Image 1 (cartoon, helix red, strand yellow):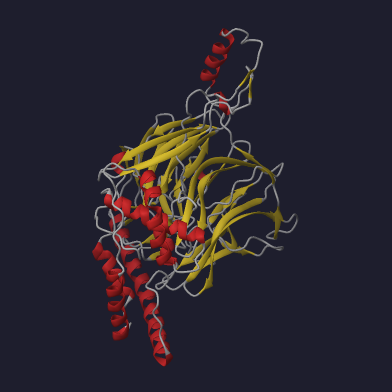
Image 2 (image 1 turned 90 degrees about the horizontal axis):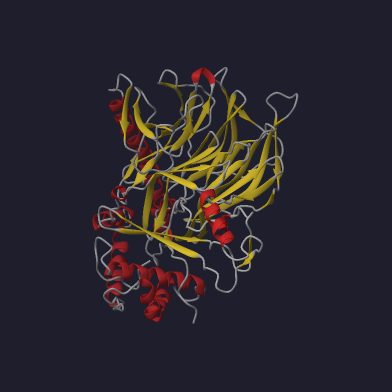
Length: 625
């Protein structure tokens, strides 16, 4: 019998830029509904036609509702008539914001973002400034700001004392089920602290997850996606905005370029080309079933010499230690014009779930050598000196190299627990390399990462963090990861000297009291069921009753959790029971791997409920998905 010790199956997640709850909405109204319902004959055609009309009408209504909500927030913002700068504590947790560097001052500029607490989605249009030298935050309220948004793009240019250009992004309803994609262009004049909306025809359509860079005296924009109740679309179009004439133009590069995608890496190389790497996209494989792709290809967009406005695509294949395929990674440009990539999430996707491994690794791409490098930290020098002095004090320590034998230290697992205000404990685990691998030589001149005698400080694995580089230092803020079915949004701030590459410095730690999470209530679930059943008729109601009664008959008592029993002990003890439940759930003929994952998910759900970590307890039927 295979062990059930497999990675936890996360609930379906929207990827790459957004949280898991959105991915479920992409599956369509019936993708995760009840099984076994079949419509027959003309009745089915009439029902389908009615539902299509209803969905179309609801889509228009939802967009109108969101526009009205956005207008309401803009009315509130219009009450601000003067610039107000208020010293403040660090910003609240968020992701999909923008973090930019001031071109003339030692400041970082944070704008927008989103936060989800399990029941409600919050969007921001707040502007925060972090003073690097003073290590202090200031909230800057400026009249007539852009509407609240996330997943936009922000680019800083030095013109006129510094300008912050913002395009697109999205707004979400409080329940996180309706989305509005912006196609507006804004500029923040940093010298005068004034917002200005730049209205220019011929620009990109409304979208989020796109990428934008400054190239000479233009802004170059690529990709992104747009989503409605009925459908979604990913883009691979390219637009240029002139900072001289304030006009948009759509580019038509020759050659074969990237397929449509969002959330990719986009930077400008020292040679003047625009680099595109990775990203994420979805395709519909059959009705109500979509499959995502985590891209790992790389392209160069080049302006053709002597042919103004003419561009061409070239696909390139870099060498070196390439990053594993992932989405939700963050990007910045290092001082030597190398592109820096941090973190993200590596997903293994099935129809109704995702297995996610969140990452906190660093990778550098050198465009001159067309090569990837893994970012390795050397560890603090003071600790290295102490270790060298200690070895020299030992007999023969100055002349011999120590070879670590069988007693070498094993990899260290560091566990941090964050307790939220509602009492939920979120455990963050990190496996750190041992100080010196077995059989590896140690010498006085060795400056490798294994020299550090203590566990290094580093950001926890995450996706959708915000990055910025100033004076050769990398700043990392916020982001998110998942713990079971809970989304943990971060508000910490880290710094790394890219010249020394020794260790991360914690500037702001995650505040446990900010980790609010509210479980979905029964009333919310009931309303969703009611909405999904509209237009079904009496026949569907009878089938629902039959399914409910059969579900009650098939309910099975689950093995109880012993007081103080850990899940690691509970799962092996009860695995046969949960395997039976999983086989009943996924159906005969399902792959063994899928059965194993479903079994662990069922066991985890029941264990959490019994241990009192859910706001609502109770038994879990075998049919739970």
